[in-house]
Amino acid sequence: MTDNTPAAGRIQAVTFDLYDTLIELHPRRWERLSAALDRLGIPNDVKVLRDADLVAEDFYTQENGRVPIRDRPRAERETFRLHYMSVWLEAAGIPHDPPLLHAVREAYMAEFETPAVESNATGGYRVFSDVLPALRRLREAGIKRAVISNADADVTNLCTHLAFAHEMNAIITSAVVGWEKPDPRTFRAALDALGIEPGAAIHIGDQPKSDVVGALGVGMRAALLDRYGRHDPSQHQVPVYRSLTEFVDAVLAEQGEAVQRQEPEKVSRS
Image: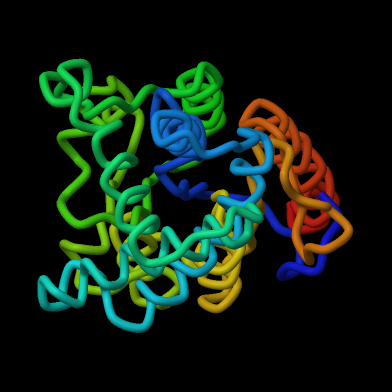
């Protein structure tokens, strides 16, 4: 991996974002919004909604980092959610006035209030098919693994229900440790649990403003996961991968290179 992150060395730990990195909503957020708009008779393009979701997620990351949404008064939380929806619709080029915004918000939330979601312990989430193979490969290479998630409640049970918690050495939730990514303390909580220094770890996630900024800020290396093909790699200072398979291939290839770089030093000391 060639990038502008801290100098390459042997990686001892990989930390992962959770949502849209290890798991995703099914149907996806933009598919649910498209269905909601369809029910309201509002023309839309699901691909445009998918790309506009990036703008809305950046807004959410910045606001949540300023003051966690869960810690705000109830009225302020609802105001934020309406603002979030407004940002999303505006980025998608969909005109909306306050009454329509409220209607879209209600229709969107109704997409989550179905038996398939409400009766499911995973809340409508599913694991990407490349997750378990990637985690096993890292474990077999002796690399520690951890989740670092911005979430309103401990995600350990969710990871357990989705059958990959056993492959993690630590699961860190912002609501539990008290800080949201990109706050360096969120990442330090994972590094402390793993017993690894920042320079020996790399974090991968789908959010440039929380995952990449936070990891680099604490001295880790970072990579961006672009599962939906929405990012231009030339616009990012870190490597951009389309899958965890591709990412782990790069990590393990670099591990081999690191070992080779260390061999002459080992021989000279014997």
